[in-house]
Image (cartoon, rainbow, N blue to C red; front, side, top):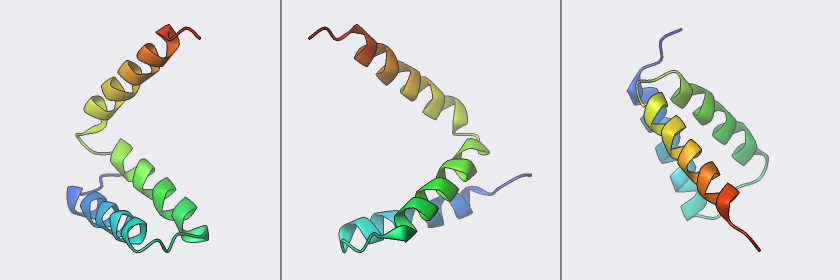
Length: 64
């Protein structure tokens, strides 16, 4: 299923708006989940995956 970048952008803006007005309840979970699934279907997926791998590698090297 192809998803347009406009749907991802729209959900991203909606999440940002809800964070901004501090009105996040059960909708936070649903919106962020849908946003993540839609983002995984776009051309941005390799960039997001490499960023997550980098953060995971950095956190894995931290010693306390």
